[in-house]
Image (cartoon, rainbow, N blue to C red; front, top):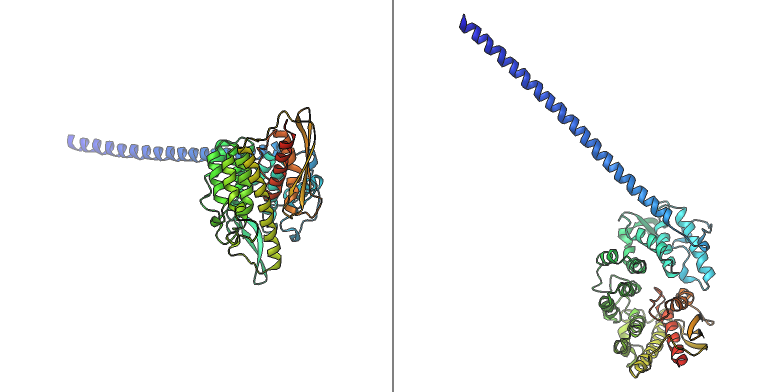
Length: 427
């Protein structure tokens, strides 16, 4: 009797314990499920919040874009015929350049980067480049940065394959190689020093084969703008020699010598300016040094005209910078202060081997205005330099202004003429 009662009691307790364990397990499972759902909801909320914040930040960036009055969108027909869009580089007056910015703005704001509009990102890059050339650094940074950071599969132009139009991607076209130096220049002008250093480290400048010449010189000017003079010299040293360009574009080293010499001269490194220019000056202009034209089509009359202009204009300006540096070593150094009032006119060759005339007006002992004009045969490379370099020099009160990307010869011709005028105006 006692044994049966005991066994019954044990059985009841066992069942109760099992039921309790099951209930506890269910409760724990339910709690875990609730916690998981809460966690998922929380994470989703965080993601949504972060996405919302990112979108809000992007919206803020868009709203923060301040356009100058002259840059109103100019309506134009959108078609595949305007693959690259209008170019500031191909204008010859400030009004024309500003109109181009308006047209590019219209193209960008009324299209999206899709297969329907495969040139949208090209137009956006050209808009950033044009704004940079006109000194609109914040706007330039915005658009250049957007293009630089496009995903690899973003549409970036087209090509014909077996008579069919095929959309190209950013990964195939690699616009970041062309825009990197310009992006750095915009960042440097905005004082984004630390961010600029990080962006600079993203691309290799160990050779010039993968980078466009003007991209490297733009990067050099940018590094100098943030106080990295030694790094700037490394870049100028690289692109002032034809060898790093292989057989693709060695001739670009001839004009890069001018940018390097101007950089050294304005930094009072006169021996360095001489060393840059000696390479061409010591050889003479005739005949063309074939080291600068290795691998090029020298049988084509059209190409030879191009190469001849490049070589002869580079030689003429290199010789003038060489003379300027030599005078400085002899004690005749330009000074922007204590000048004789008057109008000083100087002229040096442009890319088309037609003179770029520069007029410097001095009042009350200082430069008050500079104008530049190329009345003869013009080239699109000279356009932006003619109406930006003079104003930059006046505003800076010195020659420490960088050249216009892809307009090196014209830029350095203008700066050279200003330096020569100052030597004449000094008391």
